[in-house]
Image (cartoon, rainbow, N blue to C red; front, side):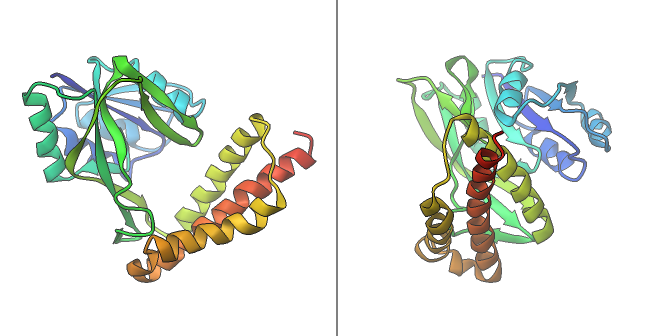
Length: 252
């Protein structure tokens, strides 16, 4: 198997070097599709010997599907710039490349680092992601900004050992900024689908989100940051539906 690693970026000078270094031993081709960064992303990518292509951003799903068209090989490993392979996962991918492919796609657990803490509960781990696949047998789908890769019916998926390391938020401020950005996108996507925000969703869904993540999914086991994550996630749920209702009230 020859493998293309595909990464989309926008102002990722803080993360992209770590990501590129982690895939060097498994990649036969690395392409970074950038939506016109204004920082040092391009310089860092070129220093690591990866191909650098720019394309206007039209949405996470749209950008990732376009990025696949830039891969040299049909087998693709898709990463975000703030992700990296741990050694165990890297070796698992090497074994897939060296052997006869028994599956059409390979999933992996994602372990998130939040403000310097590895988060292992609250629904954040193992956070299984399908990231290695035969691109001739699927496409990116979902609802922006929550994209997911969807393989064709009848295809087979196996799980790899090791973790995909996700260096998410360096501060609570970063998290809140991203929540505001993502809830703008998700509320517009729901509005485009003709969905409404009932009072039940506005009042009950945030509470259910907090209880589910913090109590039933064990977020309390991650200490202070487990509480912060559950609280912000509940707030994000409220914001998504509040912004959706506002769109309907504005006649957008």
